[in-house]
Length: 63
Image (cartoon, rainbow, N blue to C red; front, top):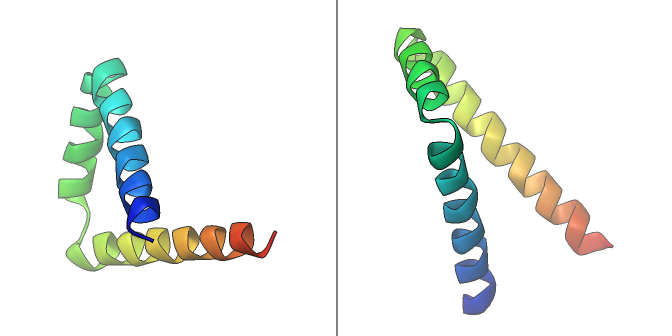
């Protein structure tokens, strides 16, 4: 269980690192766009992302 969690965290760090390494200016523009969004919309995006991740894990575990 612990190894699975650490593997997931490591994968997130790899993907995040790739984004910052390959497209730093795009990340800056994305952060500026996020600042312009209302707080409730940012929360909705966060909750939707979490729900999509949980759904993906649930589907992957089923197969």
